[in-house]
Image 1 (cartoon, rainbow, N blue to C red):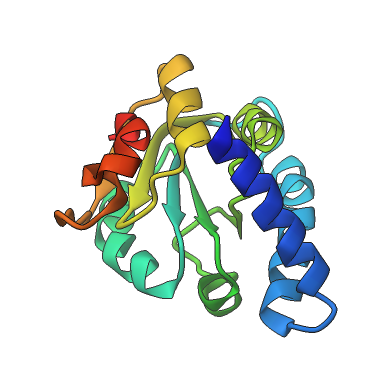
Image 2: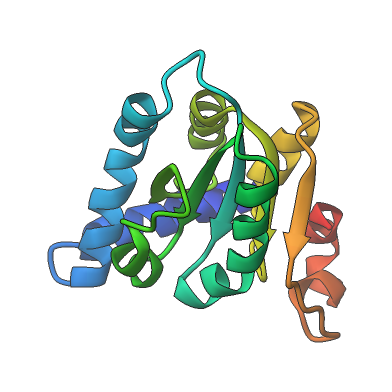
Length: 171
């Protein structure tokens, strides 16, 4: 509950600063377009996808070899690539190794339901530090296998602190 409230406040802050910060504006505009992109490029009835969720360009590069291998070994499945940050999306929005490239909507319960309903991923790959509580729990409820790619864990991360114990169940 606290997690979702914090995300709503963060999303509101991004919207409020977007007229003054180009990166925030690109994120807001990109998130608004996500569901339209999914409806257009992945209509009902199309093959399921492998979903790759990267925060930015560096995370994309870490997941790229796996994405390309899955493309070669399972050409019957579509590949969905999402970014949370404009730094990845703006550089890779035309990446030919993915069938659909869009922003990952904020991790609010409504966004998660809409996103998973439209994307219909067969598997979800979260790269590096992508531990989105609502996405991970929704994938579990829908029995979508989730893989964490190239993740690094350190003692000082929130999961291992006294104040982050309630968030550690996402692992």
